[in-house]
Amino acid sequence: MNELKKLRESIDAIDLEILSLISRRAACASQIGHLKNGPIYRPEREAQVLTRLMEKNPGPLSSESISRLFVEIISACRALEDGMKIAYLGPEGTFSQQAVIKHFGHAAKAIAYPSIDDIFRAAESGNVDHAVVPVENTTGGTIPRTLDLLLKSPLKICGEINLRIHQNLLGRDISKIEKVYSHSQSLLQCHEWLNQNLPGVPRMEVSSNAEAARLASEDEKAGAIAGEVAAERYGLPVLAANIEDEPNNTTRFLVIGKEESPPSGCDKTSLVFSAKNRPGALHDLLSPFAKCNVSMTKFESRPAGTGIWEYNFFADIEGHRDEKNIAKALHELEEKAAFVKIFGSYPSVVR
Image: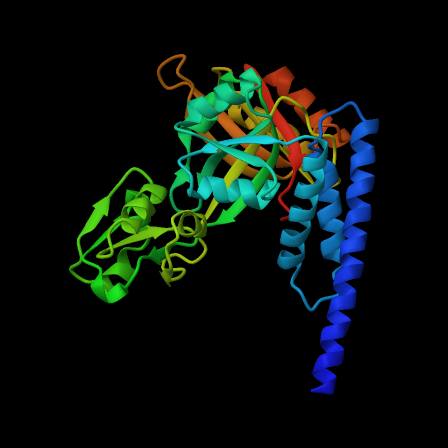
């Protein structure tokens, strides 16, 4: 008992030290806010901070845990300068909201919008500071509307978020469930689990997982498949966690805004281009990347909408557009392509 008391006293003393250090950090952040005239969200600076901390992490906490802790500290310090407004695909309780929290922390004001089009309009008009939009999923593929709007919008990509999609069965009592609500995609992602654990129980498709959680919160004989944020929002216990059939199911989100992101030291550049109508045109467009030793991490085509069988090519490459080899490759690409648009250079995901 004496040893336990000593350990608790040590924790109390350490807590006070942590509090003092966090307060000092917040004071420094506030001073920086008064000195600088630029945006309060600096994606490259935050990426550098988190990368350094995870590299220096001595344990026993995981690097993921360290990242989550410091995202919230950064979020709270950033809120001292000015409250950030972040648009996301609603309603409340969606995985999009969860992505906002993962990247910006709880101190940012997350504002739900009913469609991706509305999100872009809110960011372009200045009604929000930044926006978070889904762009691709490991099982469902690309989100076409996001790519189409990036093509037309003046907004820049300034960050990315990879969110593991963990589906949970929410409800009051699993033995009483007579129907399960969820979005059609989530029902498909949990098809085998439902077959094994709730055979014969009707599956009801609704507009979102958040709506499923809302309906289940009003009916003790209903269950919902949704994420953690929806469970918190509607006060539902998690009856079974991580019930998705594919454990590595991940959605990638983009952070978009009006400002470019300076180099962080570990960046990615997203762009779109189209080929001239002649033999070997696509080969010619890709050759500058190989010549300049630029690694391409994503490449896909979509109809350009300008004529039959005409396509735009969307790509992600490693590196920032300001790096010499990247700048050289992009310059050569612009000379050979019919059209090029750079969506932005931004830190590769570290959190």
